[in-house]
Length: 102
Image 1: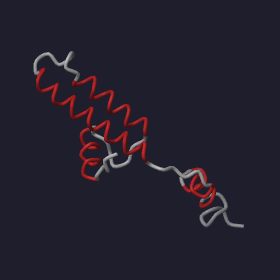
Image 2 (image 1 turned 135 degrees about the horizontal axis):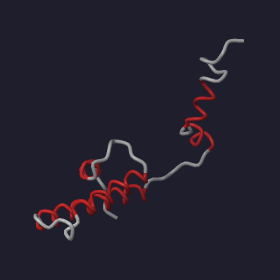
Image 3 (image 1 turned 120 degrees about the horizontal axis):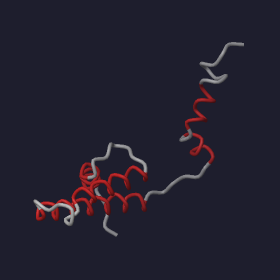
Image 4 (image 1 turned 30 degrees about the vertical axis):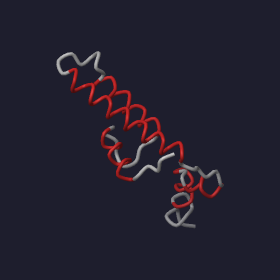
């Protein structure tokens, strides 16, 4: 498999109008929204333009999905807790350093 560069990922992200961080659901939603908007069958006035745009949208989605498929997720307890907002709230606000005094 060809190595995906940051430039390709960033271009794909911008093509799909995504922020610098996005969930899988947000990526799929952006892809569906843009595909519907620029689909050549619904784009009657500028069909050639829409055909080019939909090719870019499909390319961007494939690049991002390839990047996601190759990403390795950690299921270690420490990593899961670090990414859990409820863990951070409990640790720092409820009885932690900012919690109620004794």
